[in-house]
Length: 256
Image (cartoon, rainbow, N blue to C red; front, side):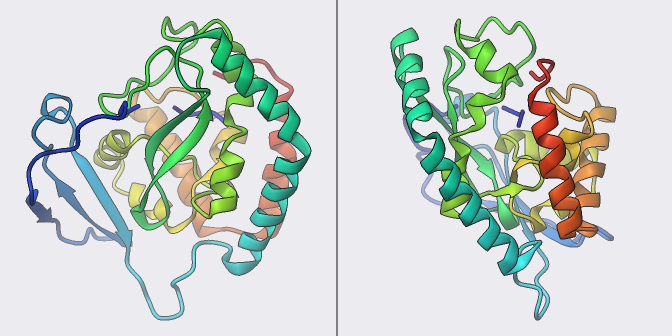
């Protein structure tokens, strides 16, 4: 489902970036630390934030625990086997249609704030990992094939690999670019709670219409509200409902 590249390049040169620990926020259930933008990293425009949820005895597993992880492995492995020829065909077309790799990888914040590299079919002419601008309908950065892949959500299928590796879940809060995590937490103090679940390929927010760009504070708060509701009221019944509603949404062409 929808949301949105450091071209391979230089890493920050500073040997030991200073980390400023922030106090625990009341009611957030999470602690976090910010690291100042490193020198030579996109001209210092990026502030990285790392979240980790407060761990209590017996509460070390992500939302859904072992049963949800077994479901993720079975579904992702089965889907990859079934769709493998189709995925290879799309990868070939993307590679031939424009310059650049078929698979786009970008750093995102995962469970307890652990950074991972999300997989997507490349739909743009740029490969941003810092200074990321959210994609919008008709974005000039789309390749000729990219707009279709995004509208149909086919570009998200490689995330089945992320699910199989344990970085993501089939269902959960959608992961955002790292600097968007920084921005969204400043807008809504509840935001770190969503890191108690593995990020999902689809989620409660997406099937309720909270998809695409979040260019206003209201949209950020609405999406965060859905994510927090999912984390705090998780159940298998809700996961099955989201899964079925996702299939219905995929037949619509209004996704970004």
